[in-house]
Image 1 (cartoon, rainbow, N blue to C red):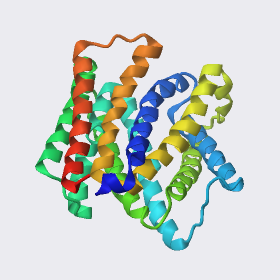
Image 2: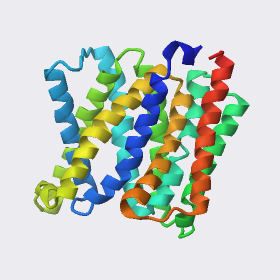
Image 3: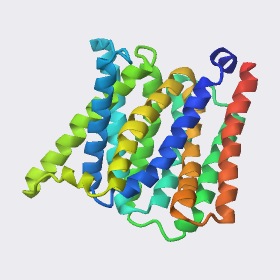
Image 4: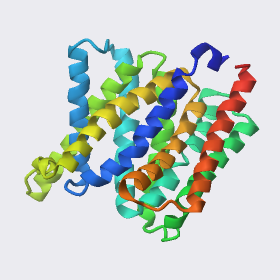
Length: 305
């Protein structure tokens, strides 16, 4: 009786992370007006790392790392943020954001498959149907932009790599949560991300003989605010919520909330950028929500919750 035992907190955490990640596309676009992709990642995770170090210093979070824990958490960090964000960044650079959204929306389908194969979690036919419906909703949601064309296959393969990394992250993070608390998972993720992404920035700068232009973050208040949102709320806050949800829910059930992200991404565009929401996109948002409801409610009935 998973839902009865845990209450609604894990579901609220999963939904909250989807809201934050959904609005992060808006702030990412704003930040990239003045920063290169890896500069943004380096600054974003540097700020996130400083934040979790400060939280630990103030004893607002407890982090007790052992070598056994660290081995599991380093594998989590390899998948997310490292491989996921590298693949996503390369993919977005070589395709459109709508194509990226459609492909990333396949993560719950991949998670369900890995959950059945690796964790032996039961995934019913109704759950599979709801997951596929949710993924179809993502396609409808971005169909008007998708008609513009797929673009380079290299970018598509990179995004499929992000899907694979994101799905495996859901599985590995759930396994790691048996040894480590959500705060410890997030702590290691942010530190590893800060070190590796900034090493990439420094290496690229050295190879190109160019200075690191981090000061461009202060080029506008919009860029500065975007970085604060991405570094604090989207990295630390959203990943803490997601890691908490993954520690309490099955991987397949938690991952389907990922498909809420494009719903909120479209909402952000409509509310803050004056973008027009087409009837087909409204239909897609409704289908996504129906798929999320289908997975959670069907499994709740099977568990007696």
